[in-house]
Length: 104
Ligand SMILES: CC(C)(COP(=O)(O)OP(=O)(O)OC[C@H]1O[C@@H](n2cnc3c(N)ncnc32)[C@H](O)[C@@H]1OP(=O)(O)O)[C@@H](O)C(=O)NCCC(=O)NCCS
Image (cartoon, rainbow, N blue to C red; front, top):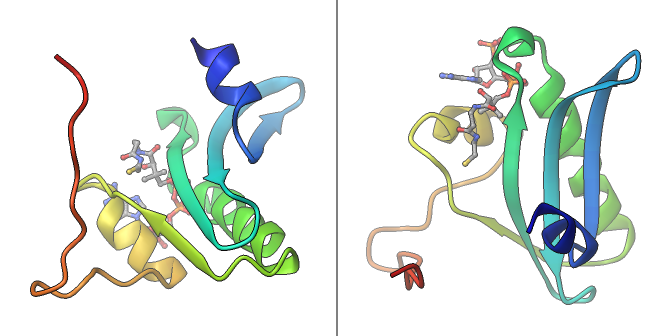
């Protein structure tokens, strides 16, 4: 499942220390208009060192270079301040995002 998800991603960012992966995030995108940022996660041992910010900023840079104009995400409670600090803004309450949970 992980391999299929990675293979189907538009771009994947991985952070390594030596040869050990310690952080991850990926983008699902149509390549021209919309990019969805998913699965941002940093090994707890290496959190609060700026690694998550660096990974997300690199993905933003990658999408900007390709003229993609809208990046979206669904944040966990924990991620909200993190993403706000990078520049993401919550949708207004009268125009909120909508989610359909497809799991049984
Ligand atoms: C959220 C997450 C990706 C942040 O990664 P990170 O490498 O620790 O983040 P950074 O070091 O770049 O943090 C940048 C800033 O974001 C904010 N921040 C990061 N983690 C935070 C937390 N747990 N609670 C509150 N603010 C947080 C802080 O303002 C931080 O700056 P500071 O350390 O100078 O105070 C990481 O905590 C994680 O993997 N969490 C579990 C999975 C998750 O919730 N991912 C979000 C997906 S929706």
